[in-house]
Structures are given as C-alpha cells and as structure tokens.
Length: 169
Length: 169
Image (tube, rainbow over all chains, first blue to last red; front, side, top):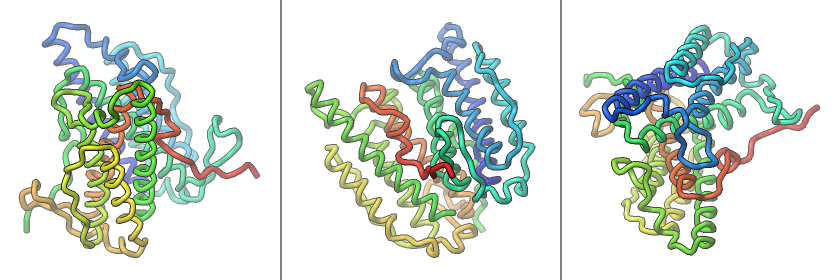
C-alpha cells in the first residue's frame, strides 16, 4: 500500500512537471518572464509558488525516508527558475524510483518524528495518513491553483494524469 | 487501509466545517454577507466555492459506495448558504460513520465504473489511489485556498487537524 501510494505521488509529480510546460507556454503567449511564476501566491501570507513546489517535492521524499529509514537527498531551496524546479522534481522522482514494496515492510509501526514535534512521535501509519498524504496533496493542489489563478490553461486531466482504465469486457 | 483512509477523509471534512466558522467570523468582522463565499472562485473557469465543497463531500461518499456496493444518499447540489453546506458535510460524515473495516473486504478487486468512463472500468485499488484520493484532496484544498485568497485566517493546523502525536518515552 505504501509503495503504491508513493507510486501515485511520483505520478503526480510527473504531472506537475507538465503543468510547468503549460505555464511556460502561457508566459510565451502573453510575453512575460516565465520565472515570474515562482513569486506568485494566492494570499500575502501563504507560501509562494516556488515554496509550494519545493514542499510538494520534499513531502514524499522525506516521508519515504522516514518510513523506511533510508537517507534522503538534501535540497537547498535555492531555485530561482522553472528549469531548476524541473531538476528538483526529477531528482525526487528518481529518489522515489529507488524504493521497492519490501522497503516499506514494518513502516506501519516505525516511530516517526521531526524537529517541530519537540520530541513527540507518530507511528508510521498515522504519520503517513494524517500528515504526509494530506500535506502532499495540499501543496500539489496549491501549485495547480496558483497557475490556474494566473491564467494557465490546465484541467482535471492534467491534474490526475492517465487513469488505469480497462476496456469493457 | 481503506477504512483508515476514509477515517482521514472524514476528519478532513470535519476540519472543513471549522473553516466555515472562520469564514463566518471574517465576514462578520468585515461586515459582508457570509453566503457570498459560495460564489467565490480562483479562476473564471474553475468551480466556485459551493461546488468545491459539494465535490469534496461527494468524492468520499461515492468512493465508499463504489468500493463496497452500499447505496449512497443522494444530494441535490442546491445549497445557497453556508448553513446548508454544513448540513451536507455532516450528512456525509454520518454516512461514512456507517462503514466498518470489514465493509471494504474485497474492495481492491471490485470493478468500479462511472458514467463518464463510457463503459470502461477500474479496479477498486486503482480507482481509490488514482482517482478518489487525489480528487478529494484537490477539491478540499481548493475550498481552503478560496477562503485564504479571500482573507480568511486559516493555517496548516486548521487544515490537518489534531495529529495522533505520542509523548516522548
């Protein structure tokens, strides 16, 4: 189940990279610098686009690491261009590619913590369901929403990607 | 796993109802009609707030029904007030309360379809992971984002709700 859900998050990150294509096309059409997107936000006290992309990348990366005990690559949050964000997205997809279903054996009961919890912990199962999954989709959806709010032409198919539909029998 | 994830979606819907409290408080502070929120949207060609709430309710409702074969209550999409949206949210939470883990036995391999797939189907496992979960969080996050965009004071804790944190040993 964990491995399958990380597969889904990987798929969503690949979709996100396609949204950047649409954003660049729109910037070209309207003749503005596509790197301007990085500073766009929906509210003055919400994270800007660049940070929404970074957290969408970090959430599955750190969750896979915490649930398996495997080290995660560090990313410095220094991106200033869409090209650099693409590199980051691809790095995380590559990192997630390295996991097998077996790596998540025991993840349910693994003890997970992070600095801001001040010594408190969660079980792997609770952390994944209550924290990692909701946070991932929150920031992913904000990336999408910031682009849509700024005129980029995206639809639900761009969000979901290809579904595993089977032909009628 | 299904039952636990539906529990999480139920928790998120209960959080959503709290966002409506914050929205009402902000409307009162700024002296505008709180039912105006229902028409707000982030882009002219995106669904308005009312529809985002409705789909956030329908997605787990229909998913639980499709994965178990249990009938779901029908909702007419006629809400014009925050109070009516609250009633809808509570109805869906009540419906989801009626499921036990056992109800989802066999959901992985159940054949799921819906009218817009034109006869094509998905396995329950694929449908849940590729469609239900991403769609639920997409619309939930848009509900949140529309409120934040319009000045309502919400933070990540309001989104996630209480975490199952354990004290240090």
